[in-house]
Length: 62
Length: 332
Image (cartoon, rainbow over all chains, first blue to last red; front, side, top):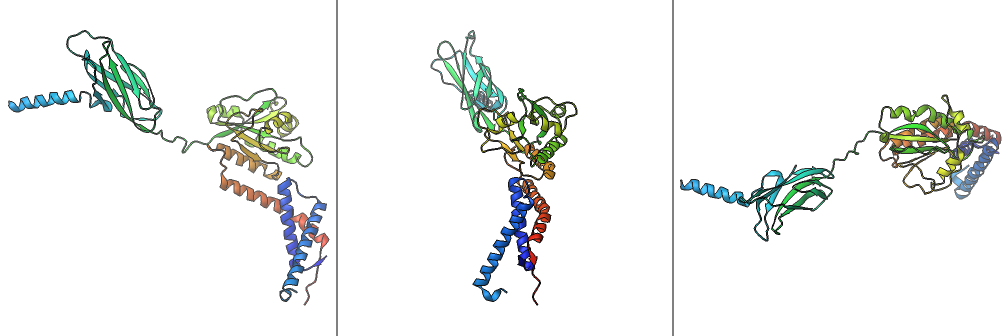
């Protein structure tokens, strides 16, 4: 995946939020593989939202 | 001379009308069906104002009239609130509502004649001794299999594990047990200084009695999981993880659901913060109303836990992001 710095920061933030919720809920941190899945899930959501934002207001996005 | 005679006559009239008007707020009313052998009757209370639930003494006095030999009398006390026991000298337990409470004594003789006298006492509510109570202290004790809880403690707490440790939970169990073993003094030490009813005994179920140098490892190896499950089933919900801290004003009876208890779930806390959570439990148990959590301190501990978990997740998350995404160069 090739993303901009801003998109990467948002993906990292969302992933960290999910990672924290996972640990607090289950009492154990996610494994490496689970963390990778959380990153992919966050990236899909963030990029999808960015794509939707471009479709709705094309003038405001790159 | 005429004035002196008038004054004496007035004094005698007043004395007959109010023969016991002064002491203890009492007053006398005579109501006889026949002329009694005694007059007048006076009654009074030990004090005009008393606390609710207090017991005061009350008296009824009578003087024989004329030269007739005194006859046996009966004393019958009635009260608007509380209970009166006794005859001429009686005790009045003031269990009635706060405010003016009255008692009446009817003194009768064998001929059926009687006199009455009433007393009024202001009952005040007891001062709230629990408004600013001393904090309750917590001590630890091992609950050996087959042993029952000792009676008389102010609060009964249990450190419960819902299942034997696995590789994920072992570290947390050990840290919580270490905090329990190191932060909480033994109940025997506390009992040497403080009365038992001001203590919170925190039991650790174990299969055998501990050696003199027991530790968290010993506690984990000799933990009585069967008893812990029996205690946990009295709580609402499923508790298969742990550690849990449960407090109740009475020892937990494993056959009836537990009501009105303090429950602290430590099953998801970071092991490194076990000591902080144990101190939070001690603070909550120290309160007189232990079912109401110290919201400010607990919220701060919750936030600290979230921050701790998020901080420990920062490194693996950044590594994961770094592995999976490629930064797009900025387009000029």
